[in-house]
Length: 276
Picture 1 (cartoon, rainbow, N blue to C red):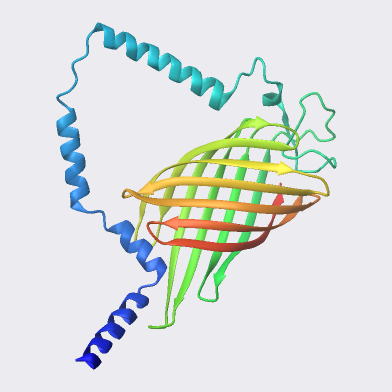
Picture 2 (picture 1 turned 60 degrees about the horizontal axis):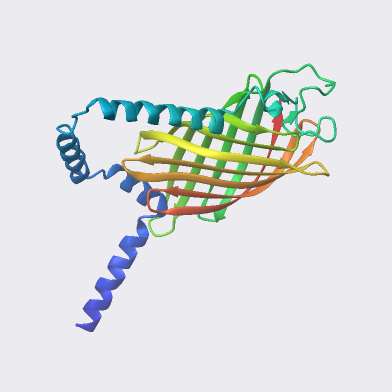
């Protein structure tokens, strides 16, 4: 009996291990239960009958809308009449003049008339000899006000039990807005979409925050966070990165944390990029 128990224990251990983390993430994203759908339907049905508004409630809704709009306008967008940093110029690349980061003061004398920029970056992300990948990032900056960013993670995992390779593709498309545009510090938010490829082929809305600080010696530090959900499960990406800038290119070293459904992934990231 004891031998049988040990055999069963070994069998289930091997079976659970044979499904690696990428497999678990993909299977969980695909397992959107019918219970959640039924709960959503019942919630919509029960709430459809509660729509009796009187004049007082309409006034309250109007006031609430105005307050919310004002908070969004001045908190997320900014006051262009009183905040001079919102008119900061986009630099051709960080430290092009030895001091400025992504932006320089609007009244500064620029040695470049470049009004747009394209940032391209690629990193090798490493967890172990069995789990690694790449992170390709592109930023299209048509002017200093906002920019489009695309992130592509291609993850690979080798399973020693059945000698198979597994992979997962994670895409993130975002519109980024820099709320603060100082010469050595910028901070902003983003809205967009996240998409998981391969066997999942599903997407969801995303939102996030990002900041970058430029210190002396051509070194900068970046932090970013993107949250999203696919089939009610989280698909999040967090990044901490240091960069050493040399003319219009840079080298980077950082840490990345991904949460794809329930499994989490931690990577050391090493790479570089160029500004066009």
